[in-house]
Length: 92
Image (spheres, one colour):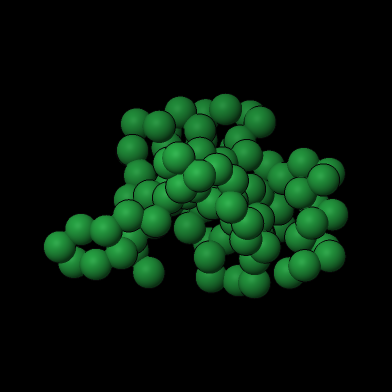
């Protein structure tokens, strides 16, 4: 699985106390069981809810393609809300 993201945005997310991590760490969500749903149609975006360390996060991403094949473009992230925690507990 390949990932792409804006490094500048990743640094901004890491500095934000409501986020606490950047996209580099957020990739861990995809290495464990996670909950997945579609967030929007245009552009087609998905939400993955899963663990990074001991904290549950929601990551918004798009599936894109280049000459090497598909990759996940990470758009944004945040610590999971109570509703997202419930979704994860019920479905992951």
